[in-house]
Length: 195
Image (cartoon, rainbow, N blue to C red; front, side):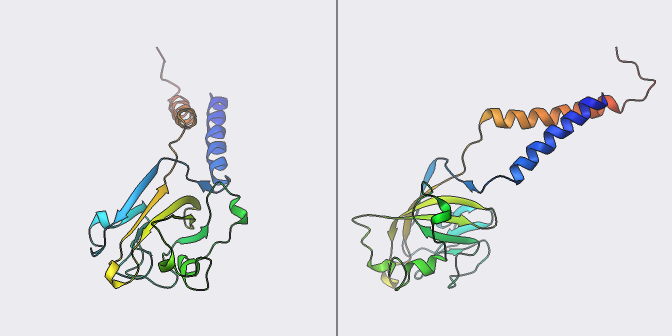
């Protein structure tokens, strides 16, 4: 019985350790489209994209994105908890140059002013690093309202977390069940009889 408990505990510890030591997570799940209409506030849930509980992307009437989970408005380092690079996750992430969103879009940056980009003829591909979660996702910016008259509207398509494989989830739940069952059996008083 003790051997079964030790084996179950080892399997559970190994599973958790492998998750902790895993490479950064790249979201390859289904994509979602997000659109914030121009000239609307940011108070309503539909005007903010909840990427994770700690990263909620939106923007005001002008300027760039900010993280509504931790920032009240845009700052030069916004959105907090993120770093951005031009490209896609199909590239080697280690070769991408990450910085703030502002450093990419401002004049002198790789895009040299997002307002000069013609979204009617194309889009901009970014890899977004969620730094607190160590997650990377693809974000294709398909629209950006420039200037006060444009009202802060924007549109993008982004990747989401992949749905876990049933076999991986079943193994983890099974290992947890073995540990719990072995513990219950191993803690019965010696006078109990199993019938």
